[in-house]
Amino acid sequence: MEIQNDQPPLRPSWDEYFLMLAKLAATRSTCLAFPVGAVIVKDRQIVATGYNGSPSGSVHCTTQGYCYPGLSSCDASSSLPSRAVHAEANAIAQAAKHGISCAGSSIYVTLEPCVSCLKLVISAGIKEVYYETTFNKGEKAMVRDLFVSEDLVKLKQIHLSEAITQKAANFLLKPTSIPQV
Ligand SMILES: [Zn+2]
Ligand SMILES: [Zn+2]
Image (cartoon, rainbow, N blue to C red):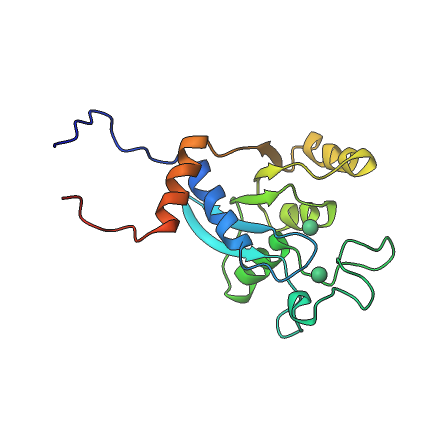
């Protein structure tokens, strides 16, 4: 039986597309805190990607089974800094390593940047931040808002639609490019 379908194929918006890629990058995370992924985009082209993990060459938190001895997470201590390079910092470092400018770009992240990463984002010339989950509260949110009020960067929370999430999950669960007979 021929299936009638007058609807055009469902396509993700650009925001959804890059957020999904950031979520895929997060699957490579090697920190036990929580997975975060980032994609830097300029003119709808990917400049660099990143995820949170130990500095290049250092043992992964996931490999040693802890972030610091006795600490299950890089974020579990109020005094120790995170062992992991955050996803945004890693993406910016990747761009730097390959001599690619981030000026005038946007970044898509699965988590709102912490203040340290936000400072780095601003100084790298990244103008827009699109994130899925909020992070900064209290004084940290205040610092973020000061940078925003200075017009240094724009932040916007975005979400994937249910339909696009379902389509992407289906694409991941089985071979994608099979002719429809
Ligand atoms: Zn860690
Ligand atoms: Zn950060």
